[in-house]
Length: 178
Image (cartoon, rainbow, N blue to C red; front, side, top):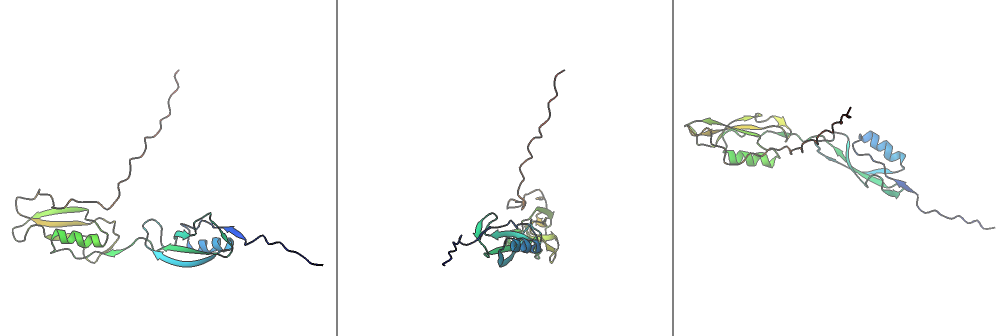
């Protein structure tokens, strides 16, 4: 007698959603789905805390063959940079240096002086060498000629934070007429 076994093909499983989960929790969910972890990369992320999954490939809900590898990007938390020394530099150079680090000047203050050329940074907050996140506030004080204290800086100030849309108006319950 001859036995015949009909194959149902490769077993297909559904990819679990491991985004915003700790790497330990993600590993457990992936193994429970009979999948494996492939490439692990790290990246800075403002919103996802360090050690948690930022993204995955394939995406959650995808149907893949059993045993397939999932590639994960793990958060290193928010990026931290060292504040450079800006004192003594022209404002335009200070802005360029900060822009290269992903930092934007939040506020420019002025101080009148006849001793230095106008537009030179004489103070900064935070101080040089301070470890900070790119979205933290940076204030510089620049020189102006006496009597020009109200002159705005030559370059417009742009804030690093995106503007949030106003919240929708709250629905108010209407009162029934008596």
